[in-house]
Length: 242
Image 1 (tube, rainbow, N blue to C red):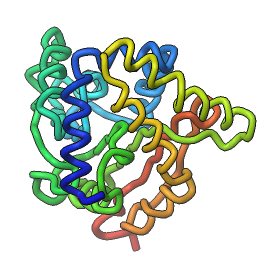
Image 2 (cartoon, one colour):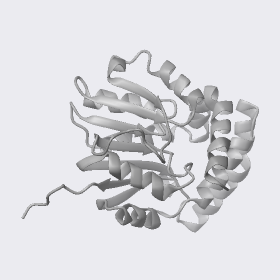
Image 3 (tube, rainbow, N blue to C red):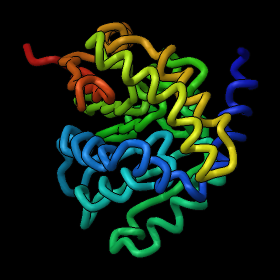
């Protein structure tokens, strides 16, 4: 699948499910996605005053949590390819006391519209699986981070344990599309979700790609028996200590 075709397809899927996206996520994950989000924000190790980029920000739930951590004088940019998801994010963020510290931007993770060394942290939630070139996305993420900045990637994954892996396969391939179709009237995005999770590399391979593009101190945490994984990497200091 070409880059432009996958981008168009993902954009179409998210346009169709954007209004029900958060509700469906809560139901199909049995609420665990809230735990995964909080864990990811905690791993970002944020401090007030920092500049943070939330790539593939979707409906803005992670964005909102990030803004709370870097306030009162930090800033968060939420970037997403889908205008429909950004519209929902704008609604979700409307009641945040830190809304004035958040900027929403329509953009592509493969060509970030930001200067080199712009952000203290870069978070990407459920985005590496959806981009057409994970390596290019990580290359761009590394570029816009400041030296000693951290990248944090939350992604769905395939559990490594045989019995649970089979149960996960049955749930994501059969039940998830049915639930998604019932709630949104469209099962195609949830069939795509199943296929994209199956195709996503295992955590060791993803960690290797982080290192390939210069990240150090790379490690990952597997959540809920491997259903979700959080990768963390650090951009090295410009001038390492002698």
